[in-house]
Amino acid sequence: MVDASRTFPESWRKRTTRTELLIWAGWLALVALFVFCWQVMTQDTIWMFVADAPSQAADIGSRMVPPRWAYLPDLMAPLWDTINIATLGTLLAVIMAVPVAFLAARNTTPSVRFVRPVAMLVIVASRSINALIWALLLVAIIGPGVPAGIVAIALRSIGFVAKLLYEAIEEIDAQQVEAVTATGASTAQVIDYAIVPQILPAFAGICVFRWDINIRESAVLGLVGAGGLGLKLQDSLNILAWPQVTVIFVLILLTVLVSEWVSARVRHAII
Image (cartoon, rainbow, N blue to C red):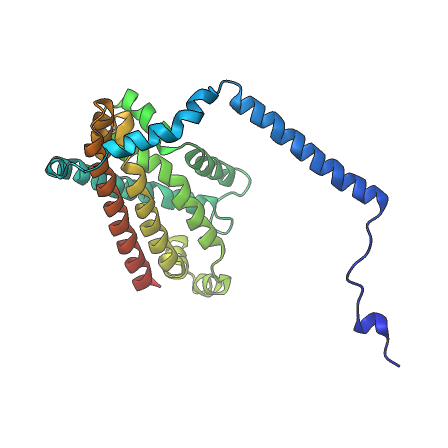
């Protein structure tokens, strides 16, 4: 005789009264938290401006067309600065992120108790501060211009590259490391012949992906004085030159699309 309890296992069971009360209490607390947060966020909101926002958006949109295409030649130099900020910032970040990643990975760090927490702190600190915040600080230290943008992109990218890279290092095949170590290889040789070949595809993909992201971020760093297209965007906004703003938006969009295409092609070639 077939056991019905095994053939048709029980898939539903009525919750107890205590469980239902806890669930309802949780939902009630969530609603109360949402209402409280909404009140905090909107306590200084002028709702008359909010109600007038659609008409204001329509008015600005009508002023943005037709675009002033004659302004396009003036954007070529800032566009080149934007690409340089993203590229050099990514390169500088990669140079600094590689040793941080090896120090953060459990299987390559000299000390899990002391060195790894310091490396993790560097990664978290880099990822927790936005590129615009770094740019604001660096413009005050270095001065306005492209160098501040490059360093801001680099400091922002270290944590991203190092985090993904140390995770790739921790996922390598340990048997290959043991095989190279058994031959009497030094630590540098183990890294060179056992670890680097395994993480190289992931490393290349991470670098290209981060460069693609940095193209987008560097396009707006000029808003705080760090050079690039953002500087022209800020100037156009200050004088309410909306047709010029449209041209800048279109150029940023095309730049991001091209960088996305290049990134996809490179990742496809690597993988």
